[in-house]
Length: 249
Image (cartoon, rainbow, N blue to C red):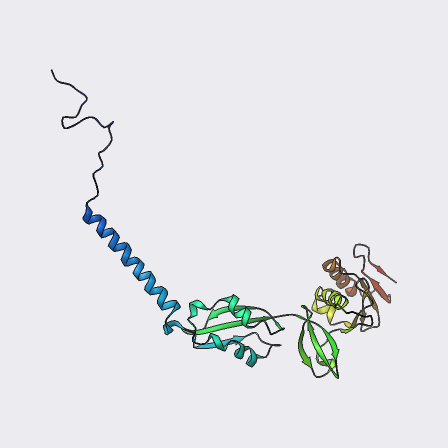
């Protein structure tokens, strides 16, 4: 008597395909291919990071208007000879941190072995007396450059009559000026403050702008710019200290 539903060469396996062990030779070939791949990756990394084949030979700098390009080159001299793959934006920023005019940098390639550094500088917002001369003040509050004379820049002169041991009043004035567009900055003669809550500007036409404290700076700047465009506004005092209800008198 024959029995159906059962394979002649062994018990039923639920309809599945019997998996045969992988031949040792095929497994060995797979390990060899993987090993060769790792060796190639290692060789490539060695070329990029350890050998002088792709190293920095020249450094070109652009964007310097306030910063001294020769000094920037000197600060970056240690990167010459370094493999390009090891040069990072962070390391270049660190090397240039002593230059107050530099806000940020962008890196690029200048040919197969050239490093291109594009410098982004802080915005000029004011002039300040320093000894017998003047210095250019940036939106970061730093002294960006020495000026030969006051008229070298059409920017407001910072005047602080109050004592300011911790620099808070100065920082408040600079923060206020940094909110203003260039068109408004060019119209200001001075920027003064008796305290952190009492910043004022004087215009070239002898009008006074009451700015107040550091709050809502962007809105104050927008309102002030609009009021200065109004040719019918002849009042001597423009008060934007409460920018949602500005006053003139």
